[in-house]
Amino acid sequence: MKIWGIAFIVFGVFWTIAGFLSYKSDIQLGIAVTGICMAGIGGVLIAMALIKKDLLNIWLWIKEIEKK
Image 1 (spheres, rainbow, N blue to C red):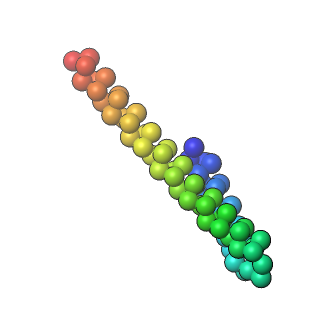
Image 2 (cartoon, one colour; image 1 turned 30 degrees about the horizontal axis):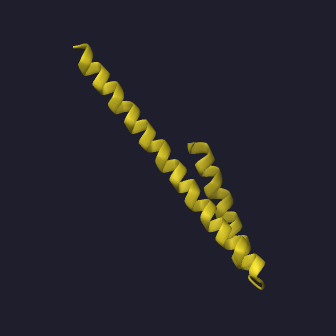
Image 3 (cartoon, rainbow, N blue to C red; image 1 turned 90 degrees about the vertical axis):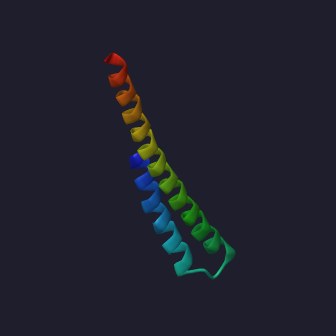
């Protein structure tokens, strides 16, 4: 998930910059908004990957306590 998140952020920033550089029509503004949304989704994917890692560490810690 983390790799996809980074890819979404990179391409989202690219789309945003490309859309705002030539915002002469609604299509370019739509491209820019799409890029902003892609970057946001990438951020959520990275956050989910970090939460998943933390939950796995907590689960392993609980299993370690149960063994004793």
